[in-house]
Image (cartoon, rainbow, N blue to C red; front, side, top):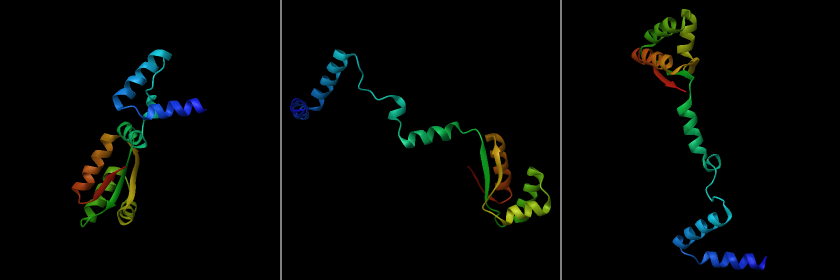
Length: 124
């Protein structure tokens, strides 16, 4: 243990360049690598970003029906095959997820139609 403390003390006195050289020599001597495995090196933010990029299904959430609620109700009825009462209930209940598990293209299309009718929409 005393020997390890001496080694640590000596290493702490090295410059960054000297530390880099030391690491290279240890890697060569023992046939190891100081590089962290890719999965261990990933941060939580990196993993989250990858998950967002690979996302294949989306939920369309109606944040607000806006000032033209009737137009939004018409789009909901037409796009989702809802009855008048159901579509009005969804528009009145905003913020509410109106459709889950859609592929990106269909979700974007529904979002565009709802926004054109005056609604505020978010894809999740």
